Image (tube, rainbow over all chains, first blue to last red; front, side, top):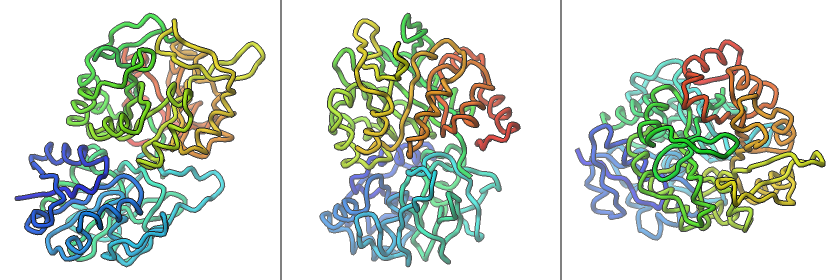
Length: 196
Length: 256
């Protein structure tokens, strides 16, 4: 099985790559359209901001490549947000693969932003991506913007209201938390993606 | 619900983990990767590595061990030590660190925080603050605390610096209360509460953990998001699984 990590300049690429290695998969790091098109699985990692993230994908000529993929695709953290239609962060038009608008955590009194730390995952529907997920399992989040709930939400988390933690629409999937930094729970979810 | 975090802190010197008392007299506690793995297995929520001599020696953190840790560890970790530019921060983040913490270099040049936040996002940028109460009762910031011979007291008030660091783009504050550090008498709840009142990003308590109740008090009374400790974890005086069970029973949101 060939797994590629799209090199869109995110700083967590190394961590995701090591996590895959711990699962026995050597993922290639690439920005090459052809390599991405023929891979069995494509992962779009991302740490940073939506505007520069999309700008980088445009520079690399990868926007239409990513949109046209038919194999399983996984966006991680910012990578998941880039799958959406739009992000409030820098008023950015994104890939439009998930009918959702990414919003900043509302400034409730006392709400600390970024949402940083371990939070519970609550399954909303049965899906192979969630295989083995326990009722009290937690994952590690670090983000200031979030995807609201939708019919694409497989699992939610709660921080002054529910938001999408795991999403899927067709062959496109996303995890808002960092599976590569979510201990055994994260490893299981990454393994589930590799098994899709 | 978001869990409160327990964060073992590993002070790194010449590739090994060390611990001093009141920031002095360092003794070797173990190898970096061995201790990192041990804490991961015990249920630590996050790790912080401080290259304590990097800043006083005017050099950046050694990236070799950052990559070794990133390969084996599947919980988040933060690296601190002499990071004084966007390029140095990028190298550490690319080596696999999730966050970088800046302390003395940000005091030298506060714009560093703005630059790091613009380059990597606020979620990657931690402001580490060493603070001590002066004779006039005011908390003020200390610089170059990794080397007692070079440590400097600054005129900058801790509360002012916390406000400025956030405004510039720090996504998390680690407040090390030097007066309570290393003596295991409990976190400085008074100072942490004062900082909490003006801190709108995650706040991590550091300095003074000696017993399980100290963690509960920091979470319940000072409302900190995470508690950092070193010697009580390194020595085995407090085992993380038992501490987590205790905190859970005390009603603190925790990852079991």
